[in-house]
Length: 240
Image 1 (tube, rainbow, N blue to C red):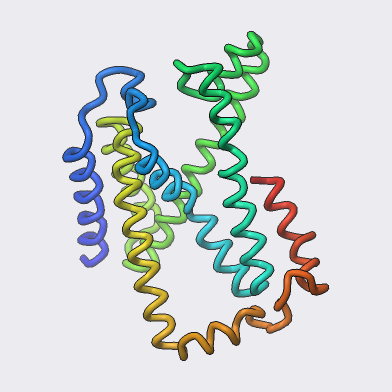
Image 2: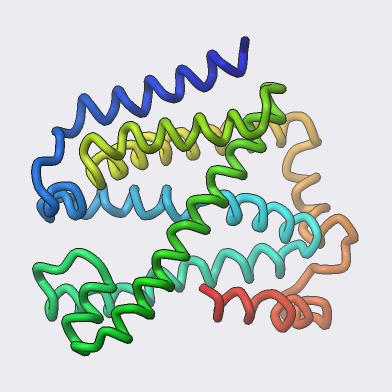
C-alpha cells in the first residue's frame, strides 16, 4: 500500500506541475523546442536534472566508495567539462541552423547526405531508447526494492507517468518537471548528507574515508591515483 501511495503522489505531483506551469503544445515547434522561449536559468536546471541520471548516481557512489578521492574526481570533472565543452558547439549550431530542432536535422541540412542523416538517426535513436530504458529499469528496480511491489509493474508505471505529462506539452513538461525533480534531488541529498554525518561520526568519518574503503586511494598523483586515471578517468572522459 505504501508503494502505491508513493507512486500516486509522484504521478500527481508531476502531472500537476505540468498542468499548472505549461500549456498544451499546439505545434511541432511548441512540442519539441517550446517555441524557443525557455529561459537560461530554467534550462540550466533542466540540464542539471537530466545529467544526474541513474548511472551517474550509482557510478559516482561506487567510485567514491571503492576508489576514494581519485575515483570521485575522475567521475565528476569529465562530467562537468563535457557540458562546458558542448557550449561553443551548441552556439555555432544554433547560429547555422536557427530554425532547427534536432542534431540529425542539422547534419542532414549541412551535409545534404542521406547516409549522414541515416547514421545520426540510428545513433541518436538508439541512444534515446537505451538511455530511457536505463532510467526506467533503474527507477523501477529502486522502487521495487523500497516498496516490495513487482519490478516490471514499477517500471511500467514510471513509463506511463512520464509519457502522460510529456504528451501534454512536450519539452515544456519535461523542463517543468525537471526543475521540480532537481529540487527534490538537492533537498534529498542535503537530508541524506546531514543524516549520514550525524549517524556515522561527522566530518572525522568523512576524512577517514577519503582514501576509499581500502584506504589506499588518497591522492590523484599517487600510483593508485594514476591507475584510476588510466583505467577509469580517461575512458570516462572519452566516452562522455
